[in-house]
Amino acid sequence: MKVKSKDIAKKLGLSPATVSLVLNNKPGISPETRDRVFSLLQEYGYEQPKAPQLTPASNKTLQFVIYQKHGLVVSDTPFFSTLTEAINREARASGYSLTITYIDEQKDDIEAILSDMVQNSPSGLLILATEMFAEDIGPFQRLGIPLLLLDSQFDHVDIDTVCINNADGVYKAMDYFYHLGYSNIGYLRSSIRIYNFDQRFTRFRAYAADRKVRIEESNIFPLESTTEGAYQDMKRLLKERRDTPDALFADNDIIASGAIRALKEFGLSIPEDVSIIGFDDMPFCEMLEPSLTTIRVFKQEMGTTAVRRLIDVIENPQSKPQKIYISTELVPRRSTREYA
Image (cartoon, rainbow, N blue to C red; front, side, top):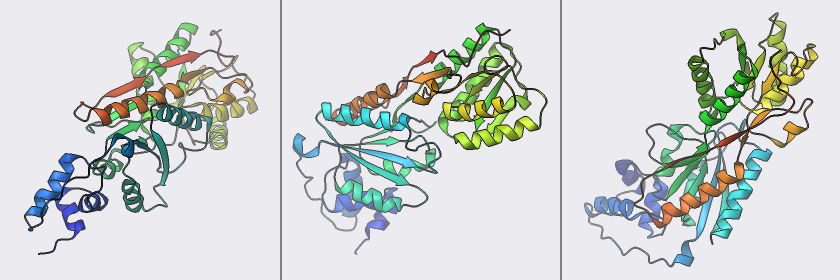
């Protein structure tokens, strides 16, 4: 009886692209996945051909996937360009070539992209998961190729990850405010829900609870994720209130910059009336007036660490998945001062 590859994929919980690679005896599929497919095929009378013999030089490509769910966070900014440059540089230094694939969830046929991708038999996949949800990872896992997630992680998903130590960054920002004498602290919260922002907000509340600092719900400012959007939202929110917190911590530098512009238009002085701390340390932080105190993310270290760990997974397939956190650094500038 003839069986279709899509039926095999459905029975085994694999992608049709993975099954196609196995049926065509292509490299890039783990022995475990290959055996599962052929075990099922043997029930239908198929015989398993020998797996292709690969030389180390024939399989020295890393596939970097830049995944955009909406593109409101992952965009052409210095943060992601620096990260990509670091990944490419480390891959080349390690003897691997790097192929970059962009996936726009709202426009692209993801299954077709994955099918094309695996035909090239990459040694491993490095996925920029900033905008991804846990359910988006499944199709990549089912490819049976060594995999690492960058800039996000998910509970109950047992995959190697390299991401920002958000707890460390928030602690440094809040501790700085605390030692400057601030207790009335608000939060500039992006309207986009991603792992990094959710972690920062959770840690913000946790720090406040530990220090017995009361956070008023009215001091949580929901803002659009762009500079212009944050500016417009902050203007609208300021019109609806008579006062502001003495200090504000932001999900990132982009919305902090928009909020600063709105606060200044309302006659508030930074930092005399309101001190502000951002997150990421984007290049424009030094050019803002006043320059923005922020939490520096070591983007080059993130990229380098991700490539090194992925290569380790490729060369040691039995190693247990690791979650690696990249530390942060507080960068004091002129948007903060001691509480008067």
